[in-house]
Image (cartoon, rainbow, N blue to C red; front, side):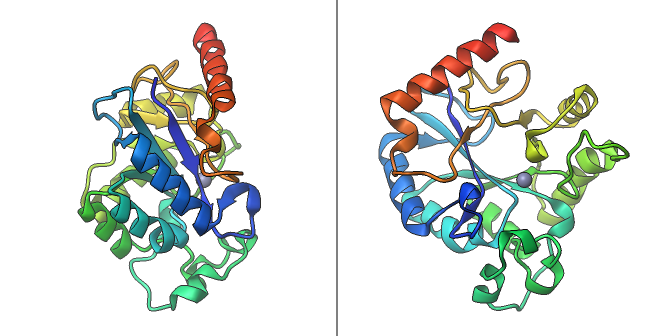
Length: 243
Ligand SMILES: [Zn+2]
């Protein structure tokens, strides 16, 4: 069974969607001792784990990317294309200073997301793989959403700007309907949702790869204690039975 973990921020004021840099360092160190991190499609063993970070906030580049290099780990980064600037001269502390609720409206003035230049650097390091997280980070089941643009044009844009293949799509807010999933599976080999379950293979369950919430960790080993593992295993069995 493959655990896929989902994180968002580091040191953000939005606590349910964040961990401290100290917690992430201890957590990733522990992962490096117990597991082998893999990218989508790589061979799964009983030591495998896949780490995913949503939204490509600048705090990923600032805090997480150095840790990935330090502990020799891999992570999938889900990028909402429309908010990504080519490059920026804005100072790091300013880029990290926004409250979570202000990030999307001020993306042009404060560059609170990774830039394309930073995304290219991270991909070239071999420690980061890019997933599309739609064009505008919208709820795909909202009325009037252009699914083709959100799901397919975002892939084309990322591949052009970063110069890599993009085979993974992470559903924004974990929301979807049949049309969105069908289109995503047409253009991507790996489609990720939320749900705190494990995955028997890279096909996930019912064609969607489940992710475990890694934000708001109480302790570095919170996700790996026997009780948590039991809960994830039970959820997996329920989802599998329903699929
Ligand atoms: Zn998101």
